[in-house]
View (cartoon, helix red, strand yellow):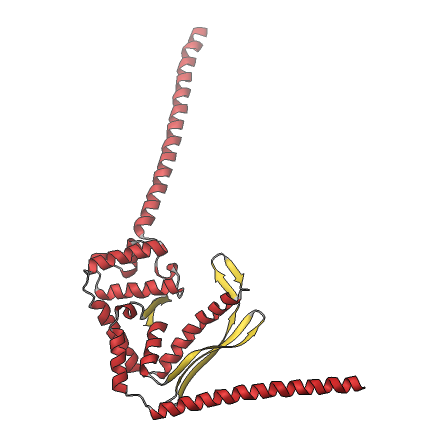
Length: 304
């Protein structure tokens, strides 16, 4: 009896300890939130200065080259600002709290939340999602056991939701202004001619994804000597999407007609050779038969 009372008392003490720790964590988070709101009210953003900082950031070539993503969906091509541009927008717009949190890790899956909160206007976007601990490849599905692989999988899935959350709290005209400035930065890159930059892009596609220049020309519908700065910007977006794993090569490119034609020519040549070989064999057998018939004739006459 005394042991039962002791165990019950220990359980109550443990529950009280857990409750105290939970209350302490909640109180700490509440104080942090109050502190963020207080600082945002004390130092509100200047939208004109924030806009200027965003434009200055978009003039950097390193950001402009990774600012857009592009991938096909059905018969259309989807484009938009990447997570890199979204992060720069949030950092320079100011008074925005954003990130990805793993709420719970269950056997075989994780529950996470991506959020963006404008503490000055109290505008908040959040998305809760589940990430299975699986990696899907063309060779099959692999179960993730390493904590680092699980973390990277959650972070990769969370970055897409985080981008949507950030773009949901920043004014749309500011986002469009940033995209336009990034396109200007790419178009204004005159350190080398467009022809040379396209040549380097074709080489990168070939080395990284085994995509030829002919396949790229088929995608756009015309030869590379007619490409413009806009086409070059689109190529950068496609390269970034393939590199980040947002799309696959087959989503954009198929075998070129010249490659198919070459393959068909080879097959046709093989078939022709086979047919000609069969014809020669048939002619040879006919000639032998005729010779035999010719020899048989006189022999029969001599017998008669």
